[in-house]
Length: 475
Ligand code: FAD
Image (cartoon, rainbow, N blue to C red):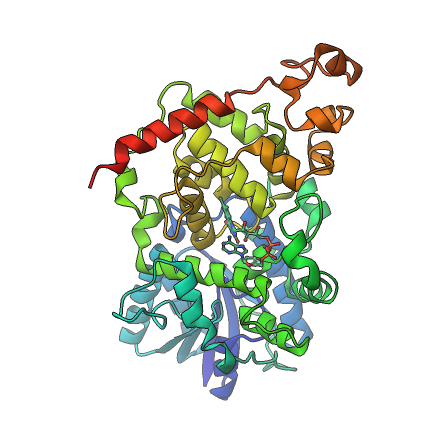
């Protein structure tokens, strides 16, 4: 009796339902990872995600070794590899934890059918979410489009959720005949641009648990106040571990309970709720990865002039608007960006620059270590004003006011835009308003040491509102 345990984005042993079910089968368990990027097209993992995946797979393999097992790594066509491994090991069952994006959902359905046709027993489980997207429905049986109502329905059922601990040992498994190594998957960049990632992150389940523990012990109480200040490390930074399944939301819920925090009212738990909502939307409205949920936006007059040039300036953190540039450089260097700054850079791209949200989402996809189709799509559509429960279109973030409010001392800007470091606080968020003498004293020539702003914030805001007026009346 042998079970193949097919790992995907559930790279942990703790609270892993497919693993526990495989053990309960009383079976020999063959842990398998199959690298099949082509099957995820057009959303194959970006460069930063691949970097993370490399570290996470190494950590998983190590954890399996410590329990007497190991990871069988393969590459290519998932169905073909599962069949090959089943034939080599005599496996009669395959188990995995579910994914929810349209492309892999469809693939998994086909694989399940094909393996069943081969006579194998197949089962899938929920490791990634608190609730399956189809479990939460509104009064008329429809999916939710409004977060507050969605989350109210979820919290009623939180009580019943319990994580399951990792098994202490696994059925022994050695010397797998044809396994590749993690290095064979060539996930790391050929040109070493990843120094910032290496300095910032340690992928893997152990590190995720340590990070969660440290955050909950020392920062949770202040989260509601500190979460909006990008210069402070006031958030959990667990988005990549959650995306890769190194830690489960059920485990985090249990950790809150252990600290006598009421998950029903806790503001951090509510953010995990936004993650759930993103998955709910992605599952029920799969077309929204590329198309706006609010169909009026299909006709939005995005700009066509200078689009490539403006997009490149935004990507490189050369817009001349310090808070935006700081965010885009933090992203490039560390593969992560603070949530408030994500909203601000996304608002600048879609509203002031009138560039399509899909272009921003694509750049995030390649550069974020936590790039997640559900959260990224929802985040971009929300900021662009075309998603579920979206910020009203006319609410355009003003990066100068946002900077003055959420980076009042300018520490975030000074860190990521060091060329502005000597500028007094009063001008740091809008260097173009500084008198020439102040700029000279700070050693800045606007336009050469630091860019002049690529867009007039007030005029472009008016243009965005006018563009919105044009589509608003379309049914
Ligand atoms: P915390 O504040 O500690 O929150 C805890 C967890 O809750 C996060 O790890 C994350 O899993 C979840 N979460 C928090 N805020 C949100 C949110 N607004 N929407 C959905 N889930 C949330 N998050 C991603 O994980 N991947 C993405 O690709 C992504 N793209 C985004 C794009 C845009 C334009 C915007 C505005 C937001 C995006 N987010 C994305 C959501 C959010 O910015 C990140 O989850 C958060 O910054 C991660 O930091 P943290 O782990 O410290 O969050």
